[in-house]
Each structure stands twice: as structure tokens, then as C-alpha cells.
Length: 239
Length: 239
DNA sequence: AAGTGGTCTAGACCACCAC
DNA sequence: TGGTGGTCTAGACCACTTG
Image (cartoon, rainbow over all chains, first blue to last red; front, top):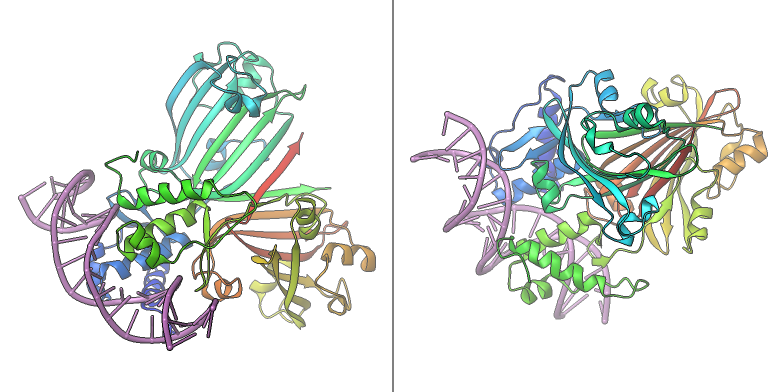
């Protein structure tokens, strides 16, 4: 059955993975407790947790902080270059999206470094916006957004739980003419992990984006941290 | 100095991270042995390894299998939609690239599933090509490539450690007219990890790519596993 | 041959979540 | 309030790398 020379934790992984694979593709239950699983596989908690961490890396299971381990739902397919947005894409894929505004403040640029992506200097006006987004009730994404407030006066008075691109278009006539996207694999810091209710250091995809208008002026800088098991990026290029 | 309520492993992370940050940006040494660090921080190996794993997730350090922990060199910036290739991009960024052909065989399609990305049926001719690519002597990328052999007869007779796109162009007049790219965060399996000389289950970015020619026929299916700390994806889209 | 990382055991205490 | 996950201790043996 199992490769005899493989470490114990690999055998546990395989056994759990097989078991999860048999589940209904629409049912994503909590796993039994660590102590229960430890007994089941006749091992210690340390070893069991190595196995669980491995399955977490593979993306098969995830943990909700202090609540336990759960089977991971399917990833959301996301095209960073598409003329779409989070909510529309989620609903098109039969999922239930939600957006919460965590923090929303008209402010001024704190430093040269903060303003650099938007070409702003210290003291220039901007809007800071932090949002948390969920799929089917599970928090999957944290966003820190900076907006050039001089280009869009009164921006913070709109309902910022909706599509920012739509607001830019309809109220300010600003279109996304160019976009620069950067993708990195990294880990959540303590605060981010807490906000998403996952373990400190959870793996994530960090996507940052600078949006330029028709006159090639950067007007929005977007930083997104996605749980690594919640997103698949799909894009296409024609030449 | 440290947050008193933070777990010990977080304090160890911070201390090591600070120390690494002070290093020269061109020097990427091996860390002291785990037992040495365990003494230095007056803790046990289990706890120390949690800290090291955390720094590994952050991308600050990596491990070379059974040889120890090392400071991570800068990431390679990679544009999957650019008219460029691995070697050119690496050299442009002042790095020393290398490519090894691990396996190269003219063969036939084994199953419906294997041939699906290229629209091939069981028994159709294809070329299987596995390559390993390195930056400055460090293995960072594993590739499994399938090529439609009927579209490019004798493909396997070329030097397949060079740019496949160039071979397609120069010998068969086939250009990349469209590309579909998928990016997932996942983990290496045992075999892949061994081939890259890293620990089983190392975190990676999985990039798959289907290339279509001028007549919209898929001719190459490329699967790439990048060490997560070796690559940053950067792309731009104009509208 | 010595030392290293990879794996594993058998416990422990605490803070938090769900009942 | 009981059980859970989060964290930590103090050992151990083995396979492999390095000198």
C-alpha cells in the first residue's frame, strides 16, 4: 500500500488525502481533532502536525485559527488582467462573495516610500482603504489600497465596499488604461493572519497592482494578500 | 525589544531576520547548524525548527536537502507574457542561468488526460522533455514539457537545452500567437523536491502554459515548478 | 569519523472556543 | 467547563554530508 521507506508523516498524508478525495465535492468538513487523529495513526502530536502542515502546503486542508482543520473548498479562478472584479468573478463561478471595509480614511501621504507607487510626495492627499473579502463565508483576501485623492476628490464618500473601478469610471471618468501587476509567494504576518482568522505565517499569494488612467497617470495602488489555497490565477495573452 | 507576549519562535525569527538583513546583499551564507542555533537561543530543536520554517515561508532562508539552511538570494523577475525566455531574463538581471535536460524522449500519448492540453488522443506522437534550470548554481525550477510531434517532426533531435520557442520558429516556422497561463501556489512532491535538492513539500509556484500557433493550434504544453523564493512574476497589460 | 539535518517519541502548560 | 489548538521541553535514532 504505502512506500515502506517513506517517513510516517508521508503515510499519514496519503491516508488522509485519500480519505478527503472520497468526500463529496460540495462538502468541506472539519477534520477530527489532532488528538483523535494522533491516536488513529498511533503517533504523537508533533508528527501528526508535520503531516497536517504538509497537506496544508499542498492546499488540501486549511486551518481556521484555534478552531481546527478543514477540507479546502475549490479555488477561485482569477484573471488579474480581465475587465472584471472580485464579486463578479466569484458569482460567475457559483460562489458567494462578500466585502468588508476594515478601514477607510482620507489622509495625506506619510513618506516618500508610501507615495512612490502613485508618484506622490509626502503630504499629498490620498485615500487609504483596507478591505477583507470572503468566499462562501470564508475570509480569503486582505486588501490595502491607496488612491490618489487629488485625481478623485471626495472618493472616500462613496460606498467603498463595491467596485472601485466602477466608482472611478462613473463619477470621475477615469478608465484603467494600463496596469502593472506583480505576484509573489510569501507568508502572512501576525496581524494579517489574525484578520483572516488563520495561523500566523500562513502561505499566501501577494498581488500588487498599479492602475494608470488614459493619460498614463497612476491613480490606484492595490496590495492583495490571498490565501494560497483560495486562488488560481489564469490569464491569456495574444500577440 | 521583542513583544513579550509573542511566542518564542517569533522572537527567534525576528532576531535571525535582523541579523540576515545586516548582511551584504551579495553574500548568501549558510546559517549555523540547528544545534548551534538551538543553544544560542536556549531552546530545543523542535522550537528552533518552527522558527526556521517560518523564515523559510517568508522567503528569507531556504534549505538545501540535508546540507543546511542558507540565506535566500534575490528573486528572479519573470514575465510569463514577455517575448523573452529564462536564460535571457536571468542574464539581463545579472544572474548566471543554466539548463539541464533530465529526460528527452520521442513517445506516444499515454492517455486521453495526458494529451488533453494539446488536443491529442491516445497514441498520437509527442515529445516529452524534462528540464532543470538553475540560477547562480542553485536549482530553482523544474519543467515538464509536452510537444506535439506531428507539428514539428524531428523536434527531439535538436539541442533541447536551449530556447524551445527559438527552435519552433527557426526550424518549423511556428510562432507563439496565443498563450494560456495558469499560476497556482502549491508544494513539491517527493520526487520533485529530490530533483531540486530541497526538502519534501517545499512551497512552490506552479505555472502551466499552453502555447498556440498562428492557426490557433496548441503545440506546446509546459508545466513549471518554481521554488517560491526564486521568482517574482511581473506583468503589464494595456487596454 | 564526526557532525548534520530528518524524523520521531512522550510528555507538558496555556489560552481560547464551543457547548 | 472541557476539549481544542498553539506552543514548548528533553530527549532519541538514522541517513547522509562533509572533512
